[in-house]
Amino acid sequence: MIGLGTSGIPASKAYYVVREAIKIGYRHIDCSPIYKNEAEVGQAINDAIDDGDVTREELWITSKLWNSDHRYNDVEPACERSLANMGLDYFDLYLIHWPVAVERGIDWAQNEEEYLAEEEAPIEDTWTGMEDCMAAELTKHIGVSNFNISKLQLLLEECMDPPEVNQCEWHPYLPQQTLYDFCKLNKIKMIGYAPLGSPGRSEDYRKANDPELLTEPAISAIAMKHGITDAQACLAYGLTRKMAVIPRSTKSDRLKENFEAADLKLDREDLRSLIILPKFRYFKGEEHTSHGSPYKLTDIWEY
Image (cartoon, rainbow, N blue to C red; front, side, top):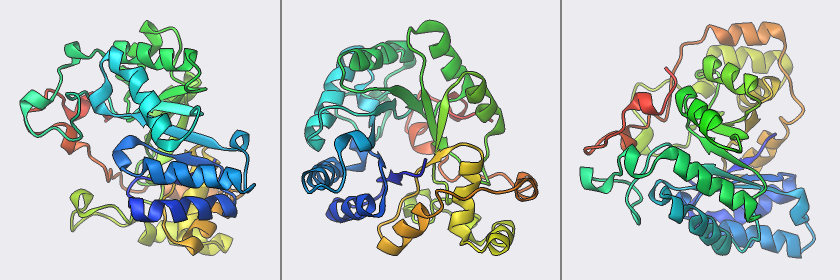
């Protein structure tokens, strides 16, 4: 339930971080080709297996389909490419990273021509490609990331294999109760990224007046009450709500501290104190809805 997020970990540090995390006890590693560290993360995983630190069967490795591979014929090759980059035979979970499509070879669209309209790469066609990945045993499970209820409903109605997971930003400032309830009703597991409020996010995602989750008085009060750190209190919030959480760190002591939250749970009084917190989203998705994009924020988020 506690995994290691590898977004934002430089390739130069990724090998050490993943080896250290596995030694500490992490078994859930979250990856994506857009993180630009697939080779290093994969090498660390394979070396850990070869050295006897862990078996492949004990690991849960997630990767994602980037926006440039949403056309049906591009989905399976993209999954195969990520597997090759990481030196793996299969993923445990493969996700559509965003409900946004761009032209082949594009990481971040910079003009209207680099986007694909929804009818050029229908999400249900992309999902059929995901189903093919599972049928070909490239991945054991399939799901989505950053999908709202309407997009999930479309897949549930139109496709043969329902999404098993929805990964989204999730923390005490963003409990996403409506989406959480919908996923629970439809047996879709949820994974929360940025469960600590992403204190190490890049300047591209940071504004001067952003609230800092780890200095929130309500979080500090819970941490003091239970004799744990503020970060552990945030992770315990997710675990109490039966969310898997994927905090990121490059420091050994922080990796260990985060992992030690695995058995923590909050009580009802704690949860009530968090319900009334102001709502705030750190990753607004504006990079996918600008530069002439045909997509709106309401195409992505549940508001």
